[in-house]
Length: 116
Image (cartoon, rainbow, N blue to C red):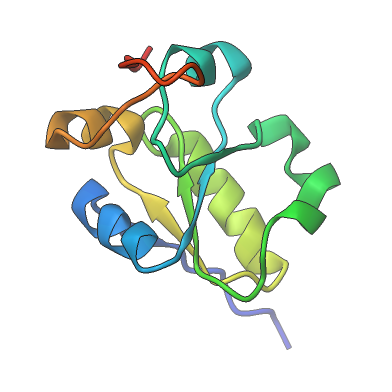
């Protein structure tokens, strides 16, 4: 019997914000330079290439919201995580959509960040 295809739920930056405010785990899968330029305040940084080796840091008891620059990389990570049994969503529009929404973008030092 063939396996069911994995369906990823794409959500808007607005819906992502609501989920995170409700306790979802926000996973930013961008590269280090992108993260350092600016990220969502509640995000956890785990570059796409490291996700498979560090699944243990991603909680299975909460919704995981994946985020990248525009949604492509995070969509691929979301599909992989869904295949591992995670309850996951992908932010359509990524950090560019997050920033356009007027949601905060910060640096690790606490200053105002930017999306690159």
